[in-house]
Length: 180
Image 1 (cartoon, one colour):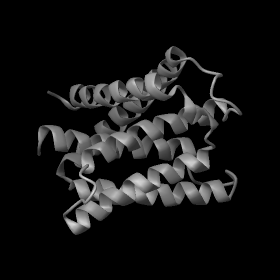
Image 2 (tube, helix red, strand yellow):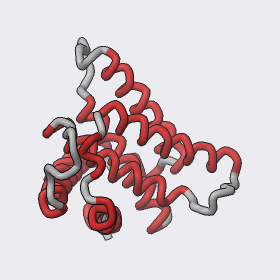
Image 3 (cartoon, helix red, strand yellow):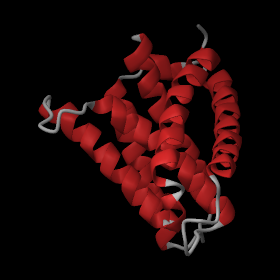
Image 4 (tube, one colour):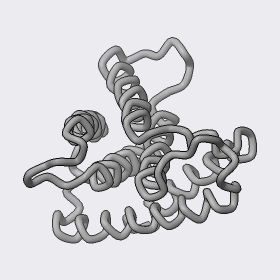
């Protein structure tokens, strides 16, 4: 399998879980502001780093579910940036949520393919723990951009950081699924 096929297979797993949660909870995440989504991604990335550092988890879930959570929350973040947050959770059907999910997933895949071409698949030589650190760095950058209310001088916006976080999480999932 090439990178695009691996990306799509891993993303399909993330989408399947997202759809199941839509069934169970609806689009409850619609009330979340982007800063709360950033914090939720932080919790997941920090847990991955803790497991990587300690080498053990007491909850019983490993790194893989947390990377899936980062992918799904990054896509939720992109949806919220596009639409704004809602005051209730009944403004979007599961079908509409999946349409938005698919749109942003496709845009993020296309970005990854362009960068992957330019960087010549350098991510394949990296350690999974480096993806964790890069996601954490992107989170802290995003928090700073949020604190500046988007008033950056030269930096990309929150959306670009969410896309990068998603792509690093997908790279981690690819390595965990298919190996080195």
